[in-house]
Length: 280
Image (cartoon, rainbow, N blue to C red; front, side, top):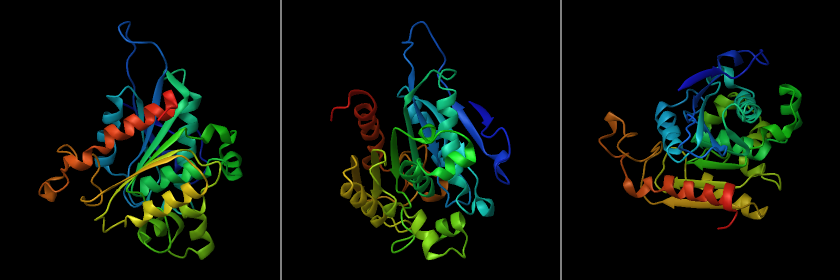
C-alpha cells in the first residue's frame, strides 16, 4: 500500500492533509494486461474521522475481485464545514482518472463506495459531480469528477426527518440554514445526471435510520435512475463487511453477521453488470 497526497496545492485550508491510500495490483505476464476497474473508498465516521473498519478491509474485498483500490482520507472535523469533503471526493476521482494509465485502470470503470457519512459523500458526488463550483475550484472539466457507479452502505442521506444531525452539523456547521441543509440532502439532488447506485442498509439501524436509504431509492426511481436496494432485517450501524475481520472487540461479536455479509458478493455482481456486461 502506498499513501499519496491528494492535492498538489492548497485550494482550501487543511486540504494538504488529505491523502489517498493506494492498493495496486502488480503486473504479471501470467495475468491479463487489460486495464482494471477502480474502487474509491470513503470510510464513515460522521464527518468527524475516517473509520479504519471501513477502509482497508473494504479495499481488500474489492482488491481480491480484481479492482485497484483507493481509500480517501478526506477532510473531517471543523475543517470539513461548508462541504469540503465534496471537493475531496471530486479531486480523488479526478486523480484516479488522470493517472489511470499509470495505475493500469480503465478510466470509464471507476466506482465509489461509502459508509454512513462516507455513504453520504459517495452519494453526494454521484449526484453533484456536474456542479460548476467543482470545476471552478479544481480547474478541471466536470466529467473528470463523474464516477461510473456508486455503492452506498447504510448512508446518511437527509438533513430533515430521519436525519443523522451530527453528520450534517459537521459538514455544514451547526448554524446551517434550511437552504444549506436542503442543498446537501441527497434525496433533493437526484437528477438525470445521477449515476447508477447500489444501496444497502439494515432495518434495525438506530443511528442512521433505514428511511435514509428508502428516501434516496424513491428519488432515484422518480428520475428513472438505475439502482439496486437491499434492506437486511438485522445488523447494527457501522457493520462494515459484517464478518469477523471488521467485528470490533467491544461488540461481543454482534457485528459478525454472515447473512448481511452477502452484500459484498452482490455488489461485485452488480458492478460486473454495470461496468462490464451492461446486462442484468
